[in-house]
Amino acid sequence: MTDGTTNTTESRAAVRSPQRSAGRTVWLFIRDIVVIFIVALLVSFLIKTFLIRSFYIPSESMENTLMVNDRIIVNELEPNLIPVHRGDVVVFTDPGGWLTPGASENIAAPASANPVARALSDFFTFIGLATADSDNHLVKRVVGIPGDHIVCCNVLNQITVNGVPIKEPYTQVTGDLPAGKPFDVTVPPGKLWVLGDNRNDSEDSSMHQDLPSKGFVPEKDVVGRAFVISWPVSRWSWLSNHPEVFRGVDEKSK
Image (cartoon, rainbow, N blue to C red; front, side, top):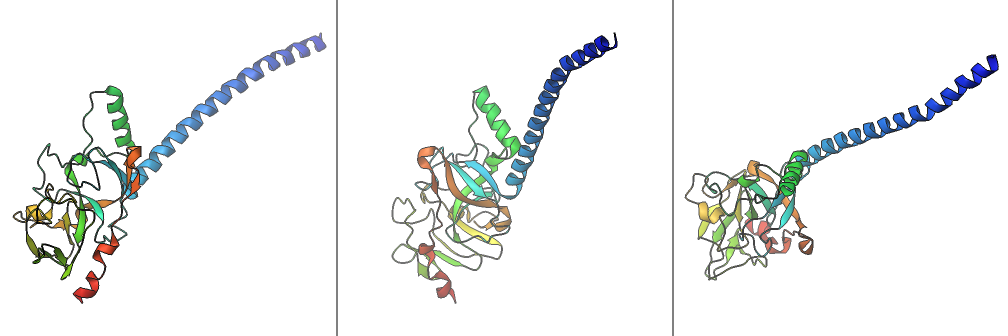
């Protein structure tokens, strides 16, 4: 009887053991998935907060560098840890009065009627790879940094920076003037002078000289520097700040 009872107990234990093992395996798998998901959200939040963010281009103001429907990745270390340079393509919040609700230049993803697309957009916003408040941002190229004397234009209809005429291969210009409006400004400390690459169709510094900001963008309003076109695939490319354009500008100012 003893041997029989022992064998029966061992048999039941043998039956229960695989079931418990399988249940434990499923639980560990679910736990690992949850942990991975939480870590992924945390990492995405940290990346968005301190490193990079994605923006959508809705207008022609930066053509042909940036086209309508392009998506760009912005390095948020600039200007907080890395100084802004002339030629940088930067994203910044509206300094005040540059944009109106629904303006074509607002950097914002278009609303989608597709519930799946909307859900994905909301998810990417939640984890930090898209921007819910992006319709209050603009993207332009930095032409002047603090202390620069910038003029449009000289007798040859060229923009000069600290007296040095610059030739800008990235611009799209219609007519003789290489900017929306003429200007003669010295950039104050902590401010930037920015222009769109599509010079005749851009809400940039030259077009807002009559506002309280006088067309200048506070460096504190800069979200970061756009460094790559991430979408569509056919447009994948790095964004250059064209240092050759501004070569000799600092030496001339001394």
